[in-house]
Length: 532
Ligand code: TEU
Ligand code: CA
Image 1 (cartoon, rainbow, N blue to C red):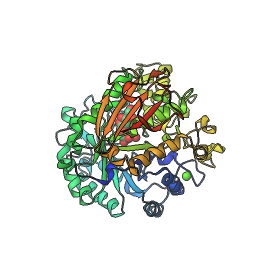
Image 2 (image 1 turned 90 degrees about the vertical axis):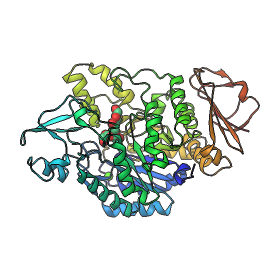
Image 3 (image 1 turned 180 degrees about the horizontal axis):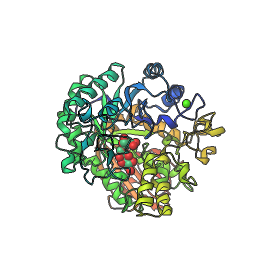
Image 4 (image 1 turned 120 degrees about the vertical axis):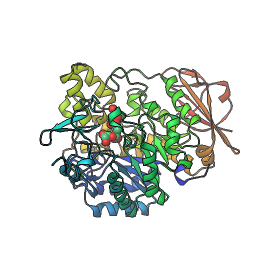
């Protein structure tokens, strides 16, 4: 495999609205990100994937863009953006922008023109039909909204304020190519491509993801933009399998560097998806992750538990009440010794948890609000109580409560009133305390990043073979990473019941562990890295 710099890199994701507010309006901003660059440098990350900073009415917190080439005044100015690019470069940190090119905001000038008349030059920038089909929106309800002025329906895979672009219109390729080159000329290090699996949609045949025109379009776009420089591209592709992943990121296909797959993130989805969560089957989780480890070559893997759409992993799969450090560090070590580029979501490095607000009015997320309207009020498929159970376990606002910097007012996130309440546990879970305590979760993440990037074991972790062990054990997770120089063995115990240390681990040298000592059993959420 041809070595690429991002094979050895670690990416940190920032959701700007919740990261750090420097002007007291209760909303994070670019100056707030600049202020924390030294903290991120201490953690040791190489890239920052920042969720959209572009002009937006903020219906979906920036995933509804009204101007791709200007900065949202809530977050700051283009001068702030240029300063962020400069200051991060000084620290050897690259910026990955979030490209949302499946849809725009309904306030984008293209859509404001398109909806004026059927013969407007921008009409075909979007998908208009006389009659809708029965496609539904990911956020609940229909994917079609009627426009009384021109007597047609327009398509929106997400909120009605996010009309889908019509990628069958070649002008879209030209417009998006120009915009990407604008940002590449500014020196961004790469892009995360929002729901990129949708830009080949075939509405007539009700195909939205992985449509027939998808890969030719991605290839054309990449050749005209991304591949003209050596930048990182990661596509968000919810329905991908390892076979589909190869279509996106086999280097020979000249499309993307890697993708985010979500198979391991939907194992606990029930009858109505995330809103009806079911218990995790740990064997299934191991088998899914191990399958991706073994079947994705020659494509490249991304590794993550969290992002701005997902609940916090320590709450979702761990035990934050009794084993907060142990279970958070268990998942960190289990993931970071695997093959692929790791992504750390803001707050994951200090074990931030889910939250339970009293009322729906405390929530910010358009997906929660629209889905409540659909499942509870319109179709009555769920009771409010059951829906709120789903929100507490899986709602996106679990990931969007303000970053917990200190145990002081509003967790040091803002001097004003935060747009979303701070999780009350900021008193005990915050960056300041983590930095003061050498045994904290922060230093586990810092150590894992050092092991990957700058240790005798780097090559083994980045390029070593992956060999699963104990695949059918209900609580032991075990795998080897092997290279000419070393064999690393990761052995962990998922859950609260101690288990015997497996024979294949006995007598081996401990490289790293989330417990201070070692006994002949694996204690609750104990995970150890052995080296031979
Ligand atoms: O997410 C794609 C998406 O569909 C997710 O919202 C996910 O399906 C859902 O949360 C699971 O229930 C991307 C962005 O990451 C997300 O923040 C945006 O809301 C969405 O696209 C629209 O741009
Ligand atoms: Ca602010």
